[in-house]
Length: 321
Image (tube, rainbow, N blue to C red; front, side, top):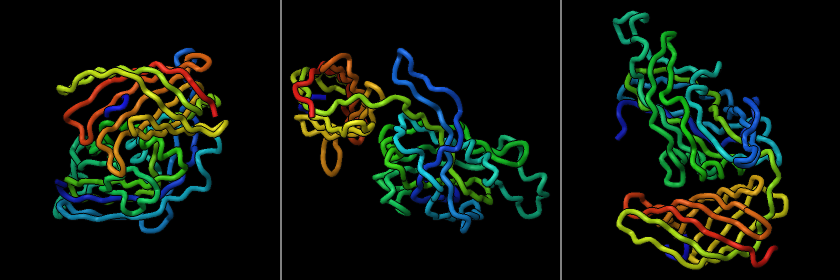
């Protein structure tokens, strides 16, 4: 943009501040001529061995609160560009237990059938400073709720199995730690035990093009929700340390944004208004040649529901520092 600008049944939360560990590589990276080169990884966030069990009665409630710890972070110098919370992998981890209990007078084998609803699962992710307050915090983002059903072996499965995280969560993960809360709304009495949360991440395999400095140009926004289209001149300031994947930018409309640089592409998220955003915007800033760039973004009012739009900027660099 330019210068304008009830809980059903029981529930259980597993939360904590975590550091991230690369567990294994799931394949080669993408990129090529269509974008920066990347690698897909599977990671898990571990939790100490105490207080991981909870029994939740239908209509009741229970919580698990822990500080997540792992022996190392995701890796020095890596920039995460995408994150998905993998609920199925979390449920399938050898250390995880999530089972509906037999009802009084009903044989265990007749507890339920494959496909029966167990409840719903949601994951809250926010900055690590939230700690135990991440669940339900306005500073965290909730992914879900996702339906949880019984499997033939008496376990549980999520549908959909993964939930794609938004760029604000990617930025949080790139700080090396985050507060996470797994919330379960139970349709049946359940026993649960969680030691890890599984995620699928994509990391950047390229160095970061230096984009720090002053940029100016023109913007055009195609808006919806009864709001008029806009166009005009724009001036932005990009902040980046040499060699760093992290960058920030501000513009002459009072917007403030942050994100990650992978190759010649800067993915950002932020908005207008402080301390409470009234407009949220996110997109990509792509260097197209020496001192030349294009920016593509989408914006919407906060909360969403009124105005929004898609904006494109054509920019040139006037100063580098």
